[in-house]
Every structure is written in C-alpha cells, then in structure tokens.
Length: 372
Image (cartoon, rainbow, N blue to C red; front, side, top):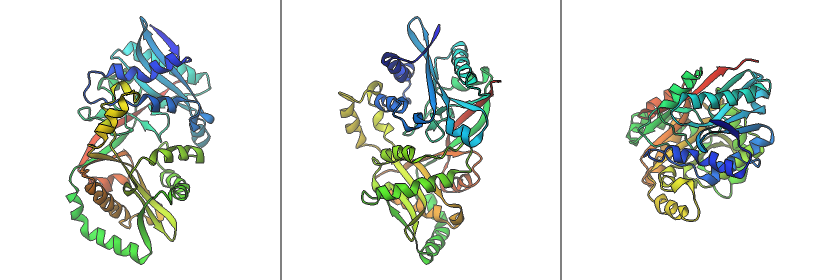
C-alpha cells in the first residue's frame, strides 16, 4: 500500500470519484457531482486564496482504497489561535490499517506546519458539509450533506480520535404541529406589525443588495457558534451564487426599515435527482436524468436561518417557519430537514424540538492531539 499526494489531473479525478466506487452498492448514497467537487478543490476556490490543503490517496495494487484532505485554515488560526488543523473528504474501505495510514499522513502534514491538534471532518470548513454520520444510516442524505457507512466511527476511535461535538438534523413531515403555537404566532405577528418588521422574499431585483446585508447578519448571528468561521465578501459571494438556484419563494428575510434582521433559506432536495446521475457525471447524459427527476423532488432542506440577538425571543422564528411551511406546501413539499444544528445550540434546539418531529440524523466531529 502507498500514500500518494494528489498532484495530477488523473489523481484528482480518482480522489473525486473514489466514493462513487466505494458506495456503488449502497442505495442511500448520493454522488456529489464531479464538477462541483473539483470546483471546491480547485485553487479558484476563495478559501484557498488564504488557506492551504493537501489531498492524499491510499492506493493498493493500483486500486484506490481511501482518501483524505489535510486542511490548514488560516482564518481559523487567526481567530482562535489554537494551533489546530483539520481533515476532510475522508473516505476509506473498512480497514483500520488504511484509516490509520491516511490519518497519520494528514497529521504529519499538519505537524510540519507547527500545528498540535486536528479536528474533522470539515469539507473544507464548518460553513461547508462536515461531520461523519453516526445515526440515520437508513436514510439518504439531504442536498449538500455527507453520507458514510457505519464503520467510520469505529475507524476514528481505533485511530485515537474522540468525539468533539455532534450536529443534529431535524425532520418534519406534517406542518400541523405549527397549529399548536397559533397563539404565539398571532402575538408575534402583531408585535412585528407594531414595530414595522416584515418578512419578504429575496428577488432578482433585490438579490445583490440583500446579499451584502445578509453576509453581515449571517456572520453576526453565528459568531458565538462552535467553530464558526466568518465569511469574507468573496467567500459569501460564492455561497450566494449557489443560492441563485433556490426558488425565490423559499428565501425569507426579516426586515425593519430596510435593514435585514434575520433570514431563513430552504432549498429543494436536489439529491433526489442527483441520485440518478451515474458516478457524478453530469455530462453528456447525466444532465438529462437530472432534469427529468428534478421535477419530482418532494423534499427540502432548511439550510440557513437566524435572527439577530436583539430580535430573538419575539416569536419571529415561529413566523418564519409558518411562512416557509406555506411556501413549501404550495410546491407539494412536506418532508423537510433542518440541518445542521449544533447539539449545544441552546437557542435553536428548544425551538426546533417544539416545531419539528425530532432528530432524524446525527453527525459527529472528532478531535485528536497530535503533539508539537
């Protein structure tokens, strides 16, 4: 067995497509489109203008048996000053010797940069998909969410990693639960009206101005969350460009006198269509399968939401959930996941546990001391 650093286009393609082979017989696996994976790992990614990654393949008899990314996140280090690096894009066959070899390679790369701790997986940051699935293996992943087999947790533990924190994914398939909180909703709507607070959709006309404001609000709302990395303008523009595929009626902003105070953005679960794109190849034929299946998408993910501190506890989040439920219902979407929610998020978990039906999946982030 050998570890090979990804330096060629051929090895990059092997890195991107390895999960497709690993999970080819798993009915719940949904391939990430190759074009999107390569775009994330390309030097044009705004993250890689200030930080650095190294990609590694584990190869045995010319067959890829594992992959991992070592991540030097300069923004994280500037904010937290904790000598911590990250691993991501971790996939492997069910063999602890392969896992340990991948982890050792990643850890050594980070140690050579003076780091003393490793956390992961983050793909590439906590603003991207992160965590290993530890509960909910029987369900396919929502769009831009990871999927892995059950043995990953054991391989991490056997490689001396330990749990750092879990991330929850909540499910709702019946909006009638909102009816229990009609009194709260009515009172919140009255309060909002008296204070000139409105909820509206983003539009093509308001998009650019909304995104400028939304970046500041997004960073402010999340600043106290574990491991949060604020997005600079270029990074948020990248995120915003992805939101352009979201129907406008699923984008809600809370506004007072032209100032955005909060947001809730849901996205159709395109994984229901991506599942039929064989091996993540959108072209030349995958695009037709995708477009055919896209019309039948009947689930969604609540991707980002938040309200500024001064406006929390006023029921605004309940009103946003009511509005998004109405918009989703009109689209025939009744199965929704809200993810991720940190297990120690004392603001969101109590609200979601009331409004939604419960936790359907858990994702885990691990840590390990790696010395000086």
